[in-house]
Length: 625
Image (tube, rainbow, N blue to C red; front, side, top):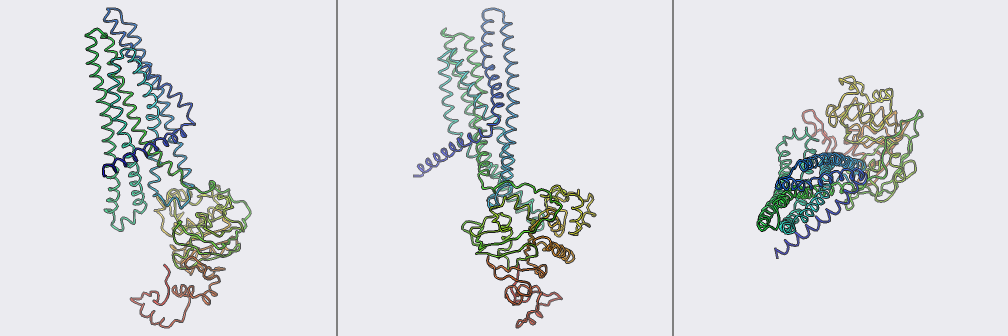
């Protein structure tokens, strides 16, 4: 029973390998189609060089026959020398052209991947780690070079040369050809059994390399956190596990390729011995001559190169097939509609603010996951400040994600200027929105590059105005090269508050009609928080500002506050209206000491909470995390 299961598993594995190979050939030809003229040119010279080399044993036979007959062999030697030189020239031309094609294929595959990756939906990117995706762009695409320059052409040229050699052997001696073909057929059977296993093992190696990249990306992306937690050993162990797994599968590939190469080598040696034995006997009996035997033995040696090329091509193609499979997997992921392009620089006139409305929106992040929005509906008129508050997990930040169309609602409609966001061209929609994320990411590069990201064409005067408005003037003066200073990986040379203000300045430089601030003041001190509040209050007169806030002190002056709880709109009103009419908001405000609420036992709770001069939130109130 176990044996039968093993056999079925092997057949299934071989079947998958066959399907993968067929698909890989189709994928490869799609990359080669624009290069077909060069491919024909390079392949022609590579094949011509190989065929010229096939004629060399015939020229060698002419030299031996001439020496045996006591004739002059100058012409035969000259002819042999010419063949050697021509083969070298043709092979050099063919090799260069094929390498050029291979590099072009790598470039095209990387361009396709990069164009796809940067347009993926956020829901798709969560399926893979950044390190794994980077591995597909770098390592996997590099493997395509060997597929083109070796696997593809060597399969064709090697196959043609083997056939040509066998034809030349047949013209010399059919009996010796039979001995040669018998040994080669046995070697072909052995190689055919090994190749599918090489392909499977190669795919596992590439998968483990992707996991290793993912592990390193995770560690290096949170380097300070790892060091502060003293978790270097654990992270080294995790990365080491992925490296060892790649090593283990790499050893299996090496073993299979070694067995493969050995099988070919033994086949050639056995062929040589068979030809030598059979041919020697035929020379003794007079059925053939010494010149023919020497030419035949040279052809046996000439079989080594094309047969080795065929075996190497099979191994390289297996690696390339696995790489193409991983590349195709990314290319099949769902992308956002249209290609987001940088918006045109803002004109002289101030843009009209945008209105926003949610109509009975239902949303969940995964198909079978919990509902995040349960029929959310509200209206935000143009201009003014609208704040979204509520406990963590209420769905506040999801409002912004749906406005940016990072995700699509399950039902209902998200409207900007009375138009469903799904009807907007994506580039146009995002060009009217300035979005400041909760963690305020800063990219590696200069401060100027970070400020002008997505707002190319803005002048120094506008940059200076926004820098002054966001209180970044001191930072620019302190940096050694001002705006041209490198800020480090993820803005490592900036403080949390500085990164947040850079993100706000970046959004303002886009002259947005709708400004979304997700916890925009969470990392600012009191002075800078007050400065941002003043900026927001100025902006509310000229654009539509929507803010998600846990710190209610930043939104008490909002025109309207939307209270959310468990994916639903609980209440809408001003600060005073909500304090008077909504219990959840009153609890949130009193927890942050924004209102004096008369609650039985409140004074006692506060007195108990005073320890060493520190005051904590009273136990009788709901907290916000």
